[in-house]
Image (cartoon, rainbow, N blue to C red; front, side, top):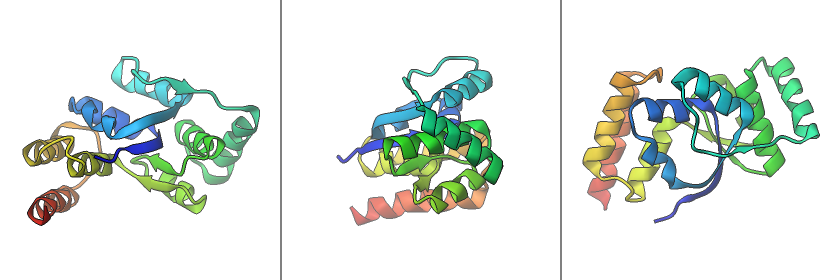
Length: 166
């Protein structure tokens, strides 16, 4: 099994997996990095504290946050997460915010969302096919993730296809 070594997470994937009780999918990442604002947003949305240590931004990264917010009109949490990725030289960022993905991609940071975490956890045998399909369905029906039936069905097809290739 190959885990993801290091990644920065935005509030979205943390919130959506928590909403459906599927936080175990985060175990695919060895070292999760989150800035203080992501933890604060999670607390505001979910009413509880994350069980992930926050990472401090240096003064240079804090200045970069302001620039990102002004120039790209992204929220504080996304701006802090992108600045943290740059500060720590982490090239993988999980967010469900389309515009934050665009900004991060422009800065040569690879981006993925909650679905990628679920698919990767399945592909690396951290969950089985039935659990992965159930998790995808719960994301559609029971989370605040803005997603369509079509996208969930495509993700389910990836799970089934991977199983048939194995």
